[in-house]
Image 1 (cartoon, rainbow, N blue to C red):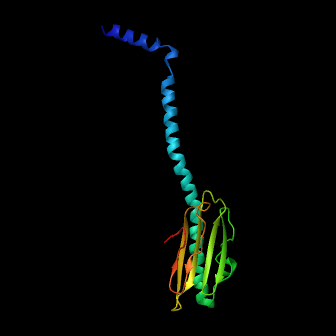
Image 2 (cartoon, rainbow, N blue to C red):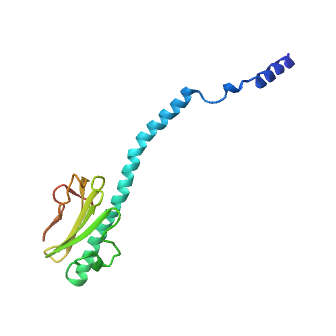
Image 3 (tube, one colour):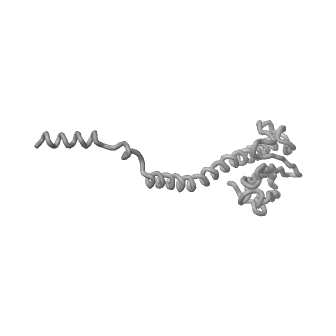
Length: 171
């Protein structure tokens, strides 16, 4: 009986048809559908992360310029009129943003204008001199892409520094 079972087993192994190997059309369709669904879910998340990475540059630059303006004001009793004067190694233009400083009596602002305004937020910030002689800084961002949310200068007074219009505080 045992040899009979062994013979049938050997016949079954060697008797398989080559046409029975591989995947069926249904199995392949299911795999492609699953890949499509996963791609549809992951792609928007990936694109959002790419925008966040580009925007982090502007956030960092605005904060760095605000701190540098406060330091410059303590040393020179006035604000720097341009980025090069601050000597912090920041360019006025990068692949994603253009940066500009504006100085007024008792305050200075930094604006980061997005080059791709349909995808990136705009940023700005400012430093003001309070009535006691101390400085106060604020950093702001648009609520959404700069094309739909224009950059407005922060309110910089001798008592307060705050974001204006559609701008929100980054702190």
